[in-house]
Length: 423
Ligand code: TGC
Ligand code: FAD
Image (cartoon, rainbow, N blue to C red; front, side, top):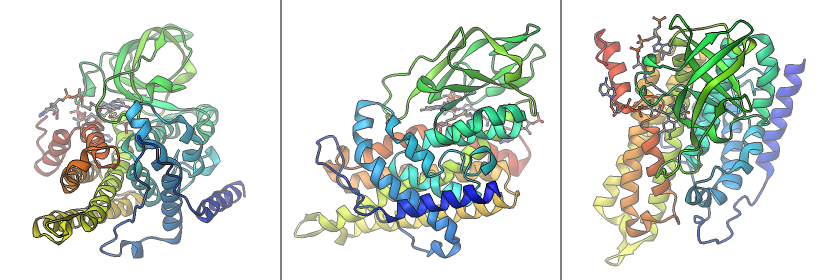
């Protein structure tokens, strides 16, 4: 009964968002982009593969991005600040825990709805999608999958509403692609664990309320611990001077003899497979998210090419620009089909980690190539913050590196088809 009521509330909220008219609130500030005129490409009528719920969720997220993200994102990126004012809106559209059951505050949606939400958010900005990915797949998911009932009750509802923000600490200064080598560790001190070590490159770290931290016990076995801001010896210095993902806050997690209560260890899975299981879910979201960034670049470049006149004709009438645009829409369409099929497999519980790696790798590379080509179509204008393309292009340099680098995902495919790990 409760589940049904929450679901109806969610659908009502989506309808409310859909009713909001005149969503473009561009105010002409020099650090802001042009008004958001985005029109989503759907060359193969993929909408016909979506249910009404998928389309409703997708459209609500699209309108949210037009209304809340597009008007402010360029300025946030220029200032290198995460726009905290959008946290409530992200929670309202169900971007925090889309597939987490409603009894824990999630939206109870399927994997394709989750993917579509990531696509639409990344259409606005990869850094905003990062925040939603981390919160959903790297914080809520491990608590839901590996945590105790008390941990689920304590954290999940607050994470779903954005009252609490989380981060995920796996990478260390000396262990990036090879997280199994991590040196962060905890010792059993009877009534608590004593945690020491450091994590780096952690999205949301500077303002997160909790951190899911992966560390080794005295036997060298990896476990996940929930570390709360305010615990003595726990600090989160921010990483500055990034040229990529500037609207996302990145930082370190430092643990200097942090006393972690024993009830904060997630007991239901240990070993490297535990954090990697969370990455499967986040990488799947990125496979969709990258399509959003690519669609935005393509749509912007197509509109610009039709309007920009050189040699007395629109540049869209030249063969060279048509080649770029035609290849873009072909690659976007292929990526959309791959993501949709992967979503179907995930809904059926049949998607493998290697299939997810292939889609993350393919779709991010597709997006970064499209961003580079789209930027050229805009000529000099392409390097300015008047348009979103250069920001997408720089963001995608992080997306192609985090959640497993482009090379690592190729090696995962290589291992899957040959049986030989070549890491
Ligand atoms: P390996 O021996 O192959 O595996 C160890 C154990 O893990 C299991 N496993 C998986 N389980 C679930 N899902 C997966 N995707 C899994 N891949 C492997 C495996 O079966 C084994 O289990 P068991 O029971 O036998 O112990 O491990 P390896 O040390 O050889 O490393 C394999 C490799 C290189 C593929 C892995 O380490 C890897 O994926 N490296 C990349 C690291 C990475 O992706 N880091 C991401 C950090 S988080 C992040 O970037 C967030 S950004 C967020 C944002 O802002 O959006
Ligand atoms: P390395 O592992 O040092 O790799 C360097 C190069 O060597 C890469 O090109 C790689 O492909 C290549 N390489 C490595 N091993 C091999 C091999 N065996 N064979 C061939 N080539 C190889 N991590 C988290 O835990 N949580 C987060 O929230 C998070 N957010 C991030 C946000 C941003 C903006 C960035 C940039 C990173 C984030 N990361 C996060 C870290 C990210 O997952 C790592 O950067 C990534 O896994 C790569 O690790 P590394 O940077 O140490 O590179």
